[in-house]
Length: 462
Image 1 (tube, helix red, strand yellow):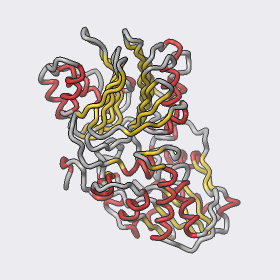
Image 2 (spheres, helix red, strand yellow):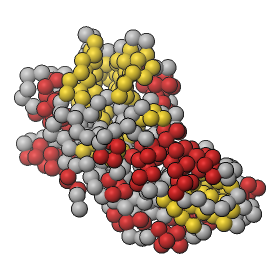
Image 3 (tube, one colour):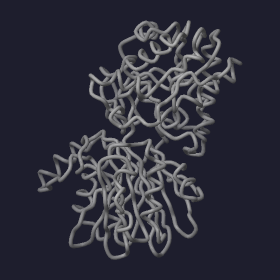
Image 4 (cartoon, helix red, strand yellow):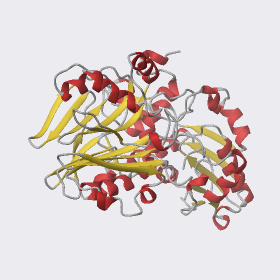
């Protein structure tokens, strides 16, 4: 679980397939496996070689495609999207894939990330006569493509991509081709696999496992891949920069059964917990993790310390999305409905509560209080990431320092505010070493800007 009910939220997940008679159905299952990356909207667009057809809506994948819509989406290629709104906000019009039609052909776009220069580009495009139908930064890319004077769509796309700054993993579908692109820093994960003779692409490899596909490789930063009837072709639209994959993919966002850039997420999180145990041991009776994303780290902490791991907190699987983003008046009740302490496990015990992050601190305080009310004699909070002190501009819903408790409070002050007996965060060095990325890039190829304030792009340097 996140440290906050409204804490870290990743923008979305994308899935695509080329060369399969059941493209829409497979995309549906792929999106279902990526549902953790966004719950506000979902959509699928298919290509049958002559036209594009799509369906999208607000809600979960199962809600959007609940009335036979998949049976109407016939084609050999498809792209899909699950959305959590960051740039542009919510609303049906912003649900992706975005579908654009013109005399020269149609294109559908699905995007994971955030364009930091979207506003600047939109102003320039509007001055040149563009009219936008959404408030999503993704639409800017479509206008840049159509305004290019290059002779081929491939060249138009490459030119448009070089106008963009920030984090982007794009899938672009036409009647006859699928384009795949990842920003030159590689902020977001994106992988390619095979399903028989078909090609698949997804934000996380867990989607391959669900649909029965075999992982082949990562999309390289700055790479443009074109898949059509002639096969697969790879080009560069930009020179590769030092890799800056989001550290929160390893800490929180990705599913434990995914591999991100060759590293298994469950293993990485266990290592985070083990390193945390070395850096911040404590005498206690049990270790428990805040479900779901902190379970692996809690297991690692327990293994390294020899303190038994127990299910001290249970997540209610049947709480509706109303409690994912509740109003302020319902937020506290939302926490209680989403999480329950196991009194028979924690009563009379000194508890180590492992969580992945603390953003605002309000939910951490409530969980500590719940454990105490359930009879815990001591609650020691251990966080498997460094303090989040700076906002993210690359696709995480965390854009001001005022939102971040660690930006203005010391560790001791945070401990007092959340009511814990002790509090410790993982060090920057511990995070890097535990994840274990083999890279000679800064921070071993990870973006650490929310912990350090040092951004891979110079736009936001303090």
